[in-house]
Amino acid sequence: MKPIKIWEKGKIAWYASKADQAYWDSLWASQISTDYFARYRQGELDEYAPFFEKHLKKSDRIIEAGCGTGRFVVALKARAYDNVQGIDWGKPTIEKVKALFPDLPVEVGDATKIEVDDGYYDAYISLGVVEHRRAGPEPFLYEAYRVLKPGGVMIISVPYVNPLRNLKKTLGSYRDRNIPGLDFYQFAYGKGEFTHLLNTAGFEVIIAQGISGLYGIKEEIPLLATLFNHLPGGWRIEKSLRKWDYLNKFGHMLIFVCEKQGVEN
Picture 1 (tube, one colour):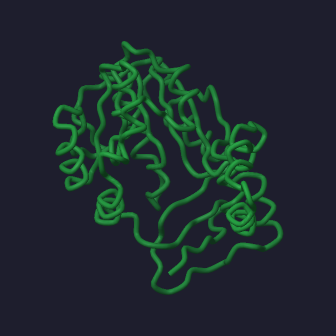
Picture 2 (cartoon, one colour):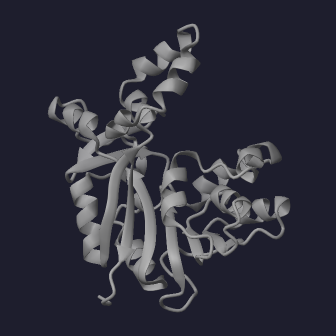
C-alpha cells in the first residue's frame, strides 16, 4: 500500500511499513553490492559533501550512528578521514557490508547506548535516523551529547516541514487520520521545533537549512516527477535544477550542524 502523510502534533507523520530492524535489513539487503559502493569508494558524499568538508577535520574521531550500509563511512575513509566508524542496529546488514569490506570499521550497535566513554568523539553524524522514533528523538540526541567532547560537532538530518508542505497543510491537503494496516514510519519536523529539541539536549545550532530541494518538490507534487520522466531530456533539466540552491528552501530533508556546549546537562 502507498505511504500516506498525516498532519499530526504540528508536524507531518508518514504511515507505511514499520521502520523496524527487519524493515531496514530487508531494504539494505536489496541494495548492498559492489556496484552500489562504487561511487562511495571514490569519496562521493552526495548532498552532504559541503557540510562534511567544512565541519569535519580529517584528524577527528567520528562516529556515524545509524550508518545503514556504511556508504558514508566508505566515502569518508576514501577521503582519508582515518578515524571514522559506524554503528547500526541491523546485524544482517552489517554482516553483509563486512563481507564486502572486512576491514571497514562498522559494527552492530545501539545509537541510544553507544559503548564508549563520555566525550569520546570529536564529531557525530546521524542522517535520516531519529525521525523514525515515534516517541521523539530525545534518546538519540542526549546520547550524542554524552559521547561528544565539549565543542564537538554533530551533523544531523531529518525530514523537513518546508514551506511547500506548510502550504499544503494550510490547504488541507494532508489526511487527518491513518488507514488501518499502516504503521508509523517517520516524522517531518519544522526548523523551529527541531532547533528547540537540539537546544534542550545541549547543542548550539550553527546551520539549519533544507537539502534535497528538487526531491522535496517532486515528492509533494508527483505530477512534476511524471513530467520530467516523459520530457525529452528531462533528466538533463533535473540535473541542472539540483544545482540551484534556492530549491533547498523546499528541501525534503533539514540538515543541522551543531556544537556541543561545554556545560553538561
